[in-house]
Image 1 (cartoon, rainbow, N blue to C red):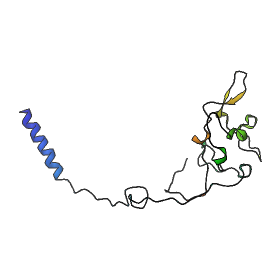
Image 2: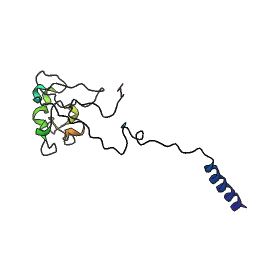
Image 3: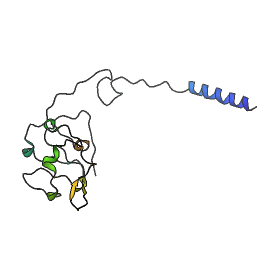
Image 4: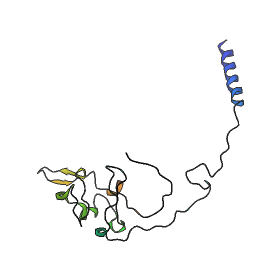
Length: 152
């Protein structure tokens, strides 16, 4: 008896599937975010980072409160950024001016990038040495995909 009920239920499920509407066909140019075919391999336009000296490049706006500052200069002269080599610290490691805007000086790292040593001095935290995980260089380019995000 249970077998017959299961067989009838399975048959109803199979037949019910056949009664559904035809599948919707999607054209290959509406599947992804790009407005071109998914089979095209578009090449983004070339761009160049600012060639201004870091001391003259200024401060870029933040897109929401507490967003990490953007890097307003090129990075190729400062790479690699890792635990042993971090040229960012040469200019941005200035614990005496944390939280202050000093005209003509690079933006100092925030206090969250430091740890207190045994003698109560601020030293760069060993967890915050790869700057490019949060801070990114900017170039004047058109967005590849539209964005309406508002951090409020």
